[in-house]
Amino acid sequence: MNTNFNRLAYRSDGGPFFIEPSDQFIFDINFVDDFLIFKIGFHLSLSDSNKALQKKFLSGLWNENVLEFFILENGSQRYLEFNFSSEGNWWAALFNDYRVLSSELENLTAKIKGSDSEVVNFQDKEYLVYQVAFSMGDLPFQISDQSMINVTAIFHNNGARTYYSLSALGLRNEAVDFHNLSQEQGIKIGDLIKE
Image: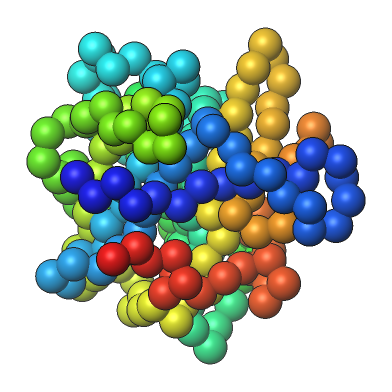
């Protein structure tokens, strides 16, 4: 498996744009043969590498350790949200506008590629990594490397939630508005693709 991953980050001091990398989550996103492919990695402390992935469509994944991907339709306010948990569960939805849910996308086929999961060493840390592919033809709108994306994560520890983001939103103890896909907070998918 390709071991070129993106890392999420947080601000340690609450100041603007001072970001530090998080060791909890890694990810990759790419387009291969008309599929949108996510590679999801959770630090081994967050997952059980001996347990089979559940692979269920499940609402409410923000109550678990979860990676979230928000992808904006070009020239529109519509966006997709994909959630992936450390247990291998997933959720997807289409929003017509800012936080206006159109529909959950339970009928999407999430193809878990290859083996259920594998342990990958990345920058001297071990992660449980699994790969999920969605057919581009099944998605409600066309996604390209120019589409805006925000990648976020929620980490649970002793009842407290910590929020991470690839953008400069930073570490917060209160809820962060990850649905905001403005130019300041989102980035182009093409800027994340690792060859």
